[in-house]
Length: 163
Image 1 (cartoon, rainbow, N blue to C red):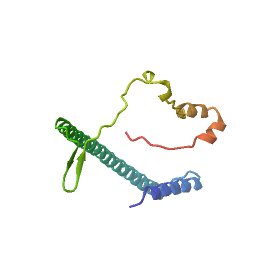
Image 2 (cartoon, rainbow, N blue to C red):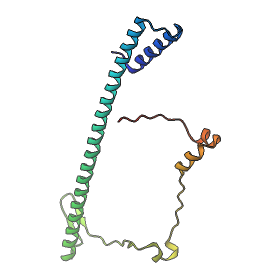
Image 3 (cartoon, one colour):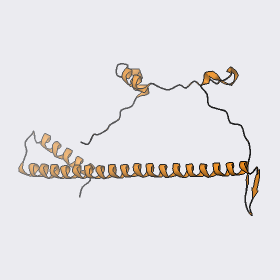
């Protein structure tokens, strides 16, 4: 079975033979042309089937990721609830430390900054972040009418749509 590249090459060779013959199509060339066209249709259909298989596997993988992310989140929540129970237990009994053979639990009191709207904090604690990004949609649009922009900041790309 020929590859898509080989079939394309055969197709171009047949076209060149027809051009060299002044547009005359012999029965042999017609047969060869039909065989290559049939093989191309089958090969293209195979590529679509493989593409569909990839889509299925990609979707399955994405769903698997979502499932595992949900499981991880659930485990993190359970772990946090366990820690909160231990904190409440130790605070209720006024215990600062519990020792085991290999490990120990120590209760510490740390300060956490409370989340407020930025305007409620003193000015000396407010940071300004400037984030510069490229407006690629505008650049692409302007590059259509400005050859210098087109050459410097864009490149040709090809894509296909499978319906």
